[in-house]
Image: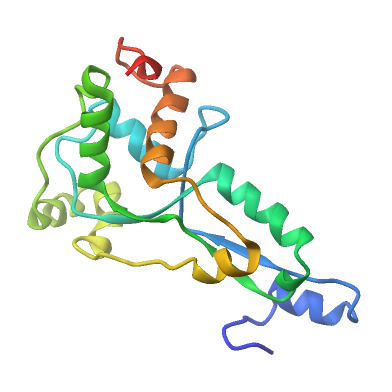
Amino acid sequence: MEAGRRAGSAWDFVDRSGGGMELAVINPVGVFGPALGPDCSVYVEVVERLLNGKLPAIPRVTFGVVDVRDVADLHVRAVVEPGAAGERFLAAAGVMSLPEIANLLRVRLGPAARRVPTRTASDWAIRLGALVSPRFATVVPDLGVARQASSAKTREVLGWRPRPIEETILDTAAGLAGLGLLRNTTRIADA
C-alpha cells in the first residue's frame, strides 16, 4: 500500500476490487468561484462576509485558492488521462492572504466593496475573540501561517492550467451578486 493511504479508504476499496477499477484523487485547497446557490462553501462565504461588512477587521490568515470550475476540469482530466490512475493531485492555483483578498476586492470593485474592512485584526484580538466565538476559534491555528501549495505534478501530468487567483476571487464576488447575496446596491458586474 502506498505511503499515506489510510486503511478503509477508497484506495483499499479499489485494491479489493481485483484490478478492475482505477482511482485518481483530486485534493482541492480552498474552493472559490461562482456558486450555484445560496448554500456556499466556507471560502465563498468569506468573500460574502467581506463584501457585506460582516467582519469588523481582517484576520491574518492565508488560503490556498482554486476555482470550482478548475476543480471540475481536473476531475474530467483525471478520468481521461491514463497517467492519472493511482495518483493524487493537488488542485491549487496558489495562495492568497485574507488581507490581500480584501484589498483586491476594494481596488477592483470600488464602491461595490465599500463594506470590506480596511483594518487587519491583531492575532491577540482574534485569540481573545476565540474565547467566546467558535467562528474565531477555527481561525486561531492558522493565524500568521503562510502555507504554500504546489500543483506542479497536477500541471505536468494532467496539463492543467488554473485561472489566475484574482479572476477567481472577482468571479466569486460576481457570483454572489448574481445570486442576490450581497447587500450593496452597486452592481459588481459593472465594477
